[in-house]
Length: 196
Image (tube, rainbow, N blue to C red; front, side, top):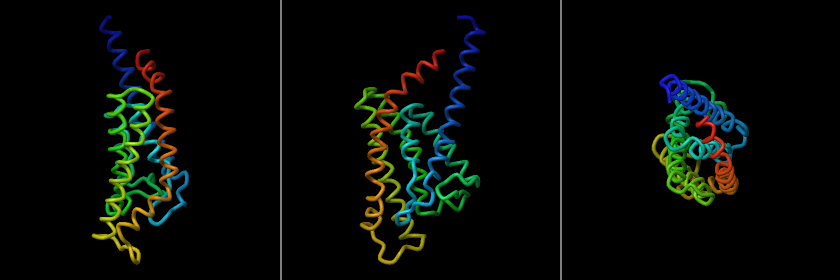
């Protein structure tokens, strides 16, 4: 392989990586607001967990996590890309900011699991593990935010925080399984693109 071929291949890989990262950041923006006005308790119902899982499954743990970090930074910079067309640094103190942070972990966890178990079952388990991380991290952040620095609704408790999360749970479990199956089918196509 000549040095010009190696350079061209490296440039192609970098360009593809940048395009994929930008694409998943954009998908997160769409997923955040596709149902922006459907809110249960204090939790908006979105497709972000689905896209965060796919980022990890398709791009791998590192690139998937970077794509989610790019999305979070775009929102924190002030662009209205978070649920409810919100954005800005004040989002950090929002009770739902833990869910935004969890997207980085979701992509990393999903990518890590499929790296070790690249089977159909591995992809589905990775998607479900990412969803579990989203619920654990996001709900605990929300509870802490309401108890420590945000005005909690009347009678708010840890049990109530989890009750709010019971509403989107069936949707998120179904979407996680679909993301796992979809990711398993699509990953070989993306891997082939990297080689051409």
